[in-house]
Amino acid sequence: MERPLTIAVVCHPSVGGSGVVATELGVALAGRGHTVHIVSHMRPVRAAAPPERVHFHEVQIARYPLFKYPPYTLALATKLTALCREHPVDLIHAHYAIPHAVSAYLARQMLGSAAPKLSTTLHGTDITLLGMDETFYDITRFSLEQSDGLTAVSDYLARETSERFCVECPIETIHNFIDLERFHPAKRDAELRGRYACPDEALVGHLSNFRWVKRAPDVVRVFQRICRERPARLLMVGDGPELEPTRAVADELGVLDYVTFLGSEDAVESLLPQLDLFLLPSEQESFGLAALEAMASGVPVVATQVGGVAELVDEASGRLFPVGDVEAMGAAALEMLDRPELRANARARAEQFAQPAQVDRYEAFYRRIIED
Image 1 (cartoon, one colour):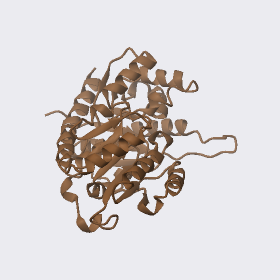
Image 2 (tube, one colour):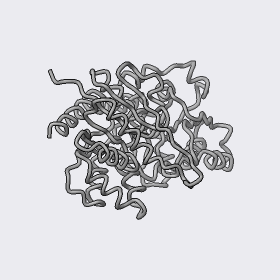
Image 3 (cartoon, rainbow, N blue to C red):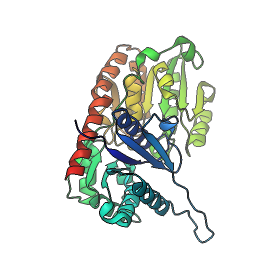
């Protein structure tokens, strides 16, 4: 039997895909007997009550008048160094290249020969957006080259990383995964659904961090086209900078009274099964974890043909369209709402991304890096 590992997981604590995947991976690894240390500037939402063998370490950020912006990268590097000196960490798993892989590199330099191995998982905008900014390009490439192993959440992202950064080391695709017991169609509940829609109304939904790249206003535009043909309600889950502009679009289009803005919700596994359709009209998606969660809940998806979404959503479980084509998305949504069999198709597709198989791959990846 192979020995249990001690892993430091570095991630963003937000409801975005990278933080969710990192946290749930850590919890799953702990369930297999490994010890996991999650490091971030606040407790991630999916680790609110961590199980035994999962330990959270908060990065304290010093604020001095000298610094216009708090030096989080340095504070994180210092925290990782202290953690590795106190515990026998086998590997640091950095989710997101900037700043996490850079901080991990600095920590390893401070630790010298006692430094653990470094694995970096790329989630999307760290490569396609932030990393391509000339301010961060060189440091992003450097952090990738200094990692002992690289993974990406889709084949698309692996290709983009190789092409944009000319990274010579191999990048292994390990798709995002889903807990099929937590997200399940059986959680559909008439009473809970009734809080948001009447029995004769379609309930459409969206879940995101409401950044511009998610194009949340387009969700409302698609919904408005649905409302032209049938009674419907829209459930918007999440929070972020585009929330108020999205609310303004709903008001402008005359559908605000039919839209519920729930804000950030931890128990999305209870909400998603109540939906009849999920909308994800993003400008860019490296994979589409929110869509996977909806599909596992038995909800078909209308999304954009971008990034790695086509690796997840097939014709049996949803429809894909060019960015901004809200008319086509609205027409497809109306057609799909009349096809209840799509719910089973969505669930069947999601089952191909079951958590155990993907966690197996991460475990094997860790051991190859550590033993190399």
